[in-house]
Image (cartoon, rainbow, N blue to C red; front, side, top):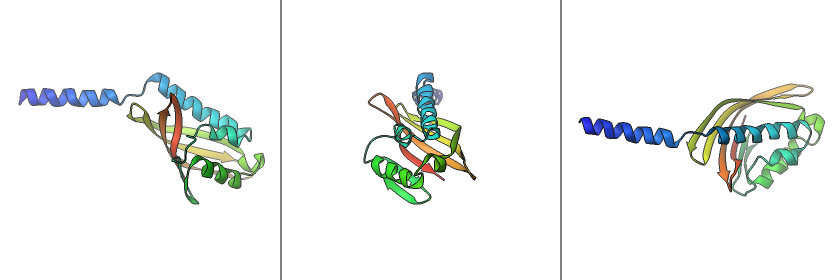
Length: 142
């Protein structure tokens, strides 16, 4: 029984240790998110989209439904935010940033958009490290 307990402890410790996010990876993810915010606030949707994985597998879920692919997501943003005035000033607040494995991180946060009106909501993002670069592969914003 004693050995079973020790074995269980070491397995659990290994799993927890394997799912730690390094300070460098955390900083890089937050840097990408901050760059998106800056690009948005300058009216640069193309720059904002650099934070997303350029793939047909990228997934965006919002109030108008599900978009599959980077291009469809970009087109949706262009329709919803055709100019700088409609884009307003965006802020993010990260609530949690949890590793799922060595190359996948789950983020929950809050967004606020100030323009003529003030709107906001919450988001959950799945970040993946692909070819050494952290990108958003799935975004659910409400």
